[in-house]
Length: 158
Image (tube, rainbow, N blue to C red; front, side, top):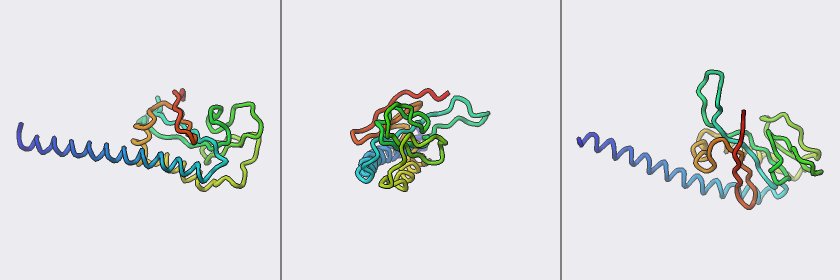
């Protein structure tokens, strides 16, 4: 092996190590941030979002992305595309302008810190977090974050 090839291989190894360190640190920070979010927003029981690579994008490159988050007082299992699909009364949902759905059958309580919700949503959708979110949860999934942790389900997005 040439000295040039060896230097290149060492550089690639350093890049991989830095990438791994970044992902490990970002994952730990994400878990802390999620816990802090729930501590500061006690009326929010779950945060739901989807993340996937589209199968078709009108000829453009199909790239992985994280969708808009929905914040709710439900357990999150009945949230689809930002709307509550269950039968329980008193459920509200809050999401950014990504969804045009209703707010459930209840109004969002004024105690819900919607600015913090919006900040969390922007964080998970940022370009810098894409690799972290993919590594943590995978592709073609629906993620439900609660105080107890994260539930990841397969997601059909056709």
